[in-house]
Image (cartoon, rainbow, N blue to C red; front, side, top):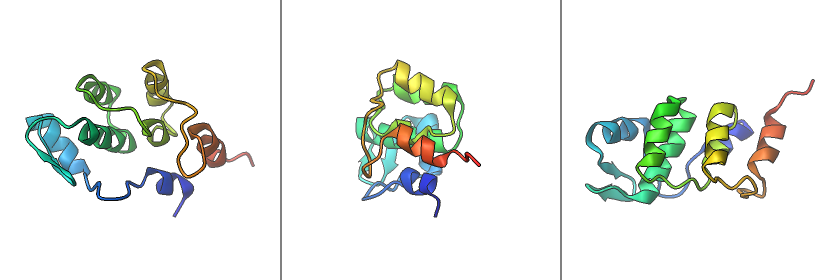
Length: 116
């Protein structure tokens, strides 16, 4: 598995999927993983945000999730390879020094880059 895939993998009990993301846009309900509720869960929205970024959803869809209250925690890791999304997240206050698996988003981006 590539490092990019490892960093984008959602661990733990978070089992939201692209189908759950599509359902959210239709119903504004989150019913996936630990987020089985009809009202909006900020943690669930953060999970859906990462899925939207990784699934190459439009910047408008990503902005909509953020406007609805999605937390930006770890979202930059999902934005590797999507400079438009990374710029948006940074403008909105995403932490560029955030650490996940002992690496920052910039470190992962540098590893991903093929310098040869």
